[in-house]
Image 1: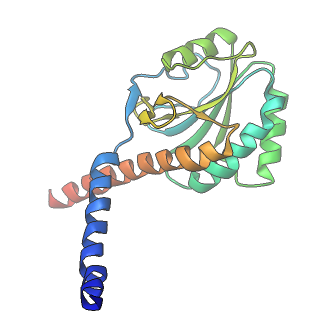
Image 2 (image 1 turned 180 degrees about the horizontal axis):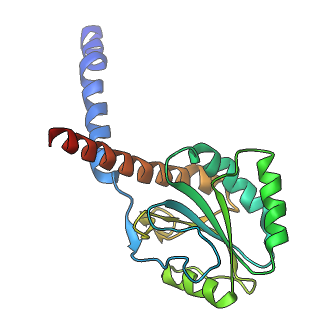
Image 3 (image 1 turned 30 degrees about the vertical axis):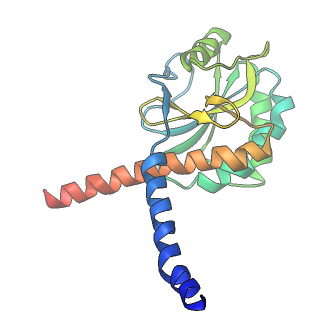
Length: 211
């Protein structure tokens, strides 16, 4: 019996583990696309663009001072872990007139980390509503044009999320009020999309070398 147990530990378990992780790569190697062609930021007074960037898109709203905690959660649980990756950015859309609040948030965040990839974009109400509508999600902005939810936008301006989330079914955005959700769901999904682009880059480089 002891010999059998040792053989199982040494040979069978590693094989099972390999098959498990290999199937995981195949099944979860891509983050589902939920909405294509999210609007660009052309209607807003900014040089920031979604195209060719991996973007965490948020809407802090007119009462952004009440969402400093949301920005802090997002910074600590997501931004600090991924901001050094190429083409990764945060874009927080806010109504015009909230520039001072955005400066306060940026200053507070700068005491915690490098905020060079935190972008605050200001726009007229209509432009904010049109951008949010282009996400085609099941979520809504509040009266101040804000929401605690943030969204993952890929380099082709597609909204990425989950189609079989255990709690919500189709999951369009991530609630920054919930540290657990950022830790247990959003972090995993950001890892997947970054790995997806890194894999594509490696394939392209390998093909160029062959060519």
